[in-house]
Structure formats: structure tokens, C-alpha cells
Length: 96
Ligand code: SF4
Image (cartoon, rainbow, N blue to C red; front, side):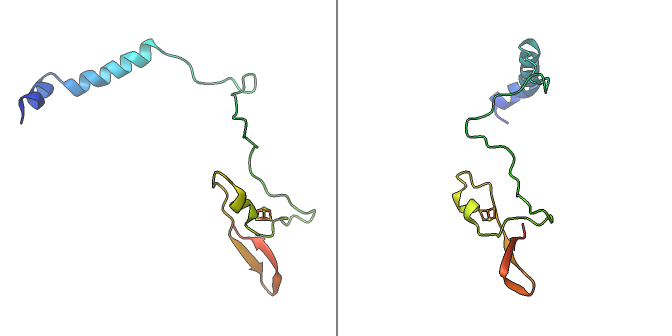
């Protein structure tokens, strides 16, 4: 055990560092909760809302699983796993 480690041990250095962070947060407290819907946070300019697939009137999704949206997504947040309808090889859909 080095002298530096020994001094930190007998002075409860880690405890003091933790108490410093706690006191700093306590003294400089700023609420981070927004009172939605009266207050709304500022969204980034490129925000487009939640991703959702459109559906036909019968409830089936309009997506054919072509992967174009996955290829075009700059943030790489879209992943498309396509599959074929059983018995209809020309009809595709997005499985995931
Ligand atoms: S996979 Fe193709 S059809 Fe499906 S949502 Fe993306 S771009 Fe549209």
C-alpha cells in the first residue's frame, strides 16, 4: 500500500468526493421535469416524429420490405427484415 493510498483510506477520500457531488447537486438544484403539455421541450430540427408503417383498410401494412428506408436512414435506426408470403413468392412484407 502506497502512502497516497493509505492517506486516502484513513481520510475516507471516496466518501468526501461523493459528499462533494451530493452537496453540489443540492446547492445548484435545477428542476429538469417539464410540466407537459403546458411546457414542451425543444426538439431538434431534423426530428420527424415516431416511425410508423401505413396500413391498408384491411389492416395489412403497406410496406413491401424493399429496404430503401433502411438504406436511406442517415442515423441507421431503421432495420427491415423482409419475408415472402407463403405460397405467393411475388408478395413480400416486412417481417420485422
Ligand atoms: S422497406 Fe421499403 S416499403 Fe417498407 S417502409 Fe421501408 S421503404 Fe417503405
